[in-house]
Amino acid sequence: MVRFLNGEFVEDGRKAAVSPDDRGFLFGDGAYEVVAFYGGRPFGMEAHFKRFHRSLSELRIDPPDPAELKRLAPEMVRRNGMEGQDCLFYVQCTRGVAPRTHYFPDPSVPPTLYASVSEFNRPIEPGEKGVSISLFPDIRWLRCDVKSINLLPNVLARQQAREAGSEEGVFVRDGVVTEGTHSNLFAVFPDRLSTHPSNQLILSGITRATVLKICSEMGLAVEERAITRRELFDAREVFLAGTTVEIMPVVEIGGRQVDRGRPGEITGRIRRAYLETVGAV
Ligand code: PDD
Image 1 (tube, helix red, strand yellow):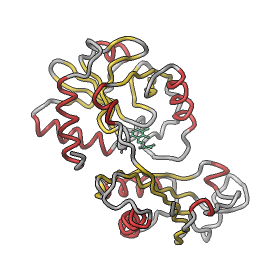
Image 2 (cartoon, helix red, strand yellow; image 1 turned 135 degrees about the horizontal axis):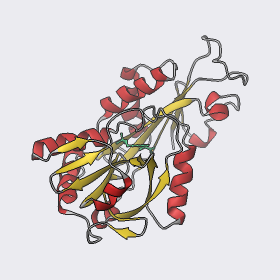
Image 3 (tube, protein in one colour; image 1 turned 180 degrees about the vertical axis):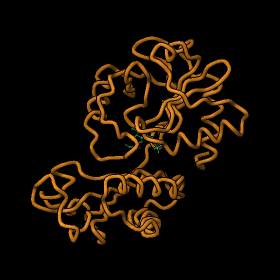
């Protein structure tokens, strides 16, 4: 696997080495993005790189030139022999290499820019049959709008979800449902859909934005309002939205069936429209 590190393409990716003094390694001091390529074509690349720029700016890390990233992503796909295939482009940027102190390093220290490409094993079966989720207290910080590489609460919740036999962990803060460990959540009610507002408590997903657009085209009303845990259990349909989960129906929450335990009709329609939009079908 060819990896990209600080301006160089490392043919044998395993040999790409980052210093132990890298701020990403020591502090989780950086941000990242994941862009899906369908049949070799990226979906939402500009929006992802815009969000990357914003995350890094919020962290006061000098962001890479978006034009460079737009060239880099397809080049990495090509160098990894994934042209024409479904794959995931990963990019992360940290505050660079410096002796460990909490202060920022000297401004002359360049950020570390890293990128890789991996196969995208699309979640086709879970997307058709639906999945179960488990709920967890949202113990994350109050800047979840920043796509930080600091993912400990997400990692812990996803692992606990797996141990509970669930596909995804979903966070609940102060009685309201925020989002999944790596996805946003939508609930379908008889007269509208609901999803958490795009504020500092969630990552404003590119897939979420795509769903909002699809719903407006379909004439489906969506309310950007945080729903309570209780409302979630009363929803007619629930689904997850994210680059890697695509649109994934939720058929069980903490062991309780959603509706009759089958993917709902609205979710199915949105999923089909999404897969068409991204070029998966
Ligand atoms: N995660 N919320 C969180 C916490 C996420 O980590 C992600 C994506 C999303 C969905 O965002 P988008 O639709 O832009 O992918 C929401 C990526 C894919 C990951 O961590 O692998």
